[in-house]
Image 1 (tube, one colour):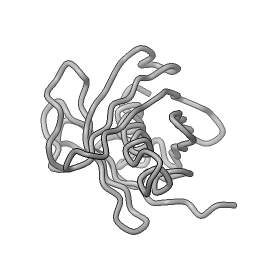
Image 2 (cartoon, rainbow, N blue to C red; image 1 turned 180 degrees about the vertical axis):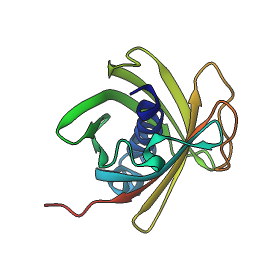
Image 3 (cartoon, rainbow, N blue to C red; image 1 turned 120 degrees about the horizontal axis):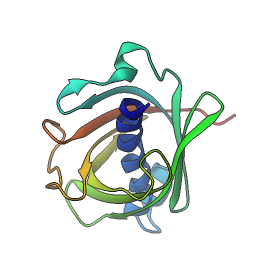
Amino acid sequence: MRRLFVALAVGVTILAARGAGGQGKGATELEGAWEVTAMERDGKKAKLAEGKGKGAVFAIKGEHYSLKVGDRVVEEGTFKADPGKKPRAVEFTVTAGEDKGRRFHGVYEVQGGTLRAVVAPSDKERPTDFTGGPDSRSLTARRLKSQ
């Protein structure tokens, strides 16, 4: 479960990106649901890539996010983003789940229907690009069509 969180934490970071656009374009580009398609922790494939945690979906609404695997909510939290940074920056706090109380920061981008993010615990250096590596978690997700 802890490894699944790593992937989810990255998703959360991405969710936080919703706030990065303030009231402009960024505010709507991340709103909605995203299916996690790939993730890494410390530069290595995480459990999702091995088929565990399949179907992980994170949703963003306002300044809140949730992460679900199947019908089970495994994490929730709040976030804020800075649209002025290049690449866009995000910070989030886990409010429910295994990592409740932990804070993360990182970077994200959305191109078409694909979201990429790299995050690290807030006591570590903020990632500045999308390469990942030690102490980081990276995520790729695709936008789900609204039902």
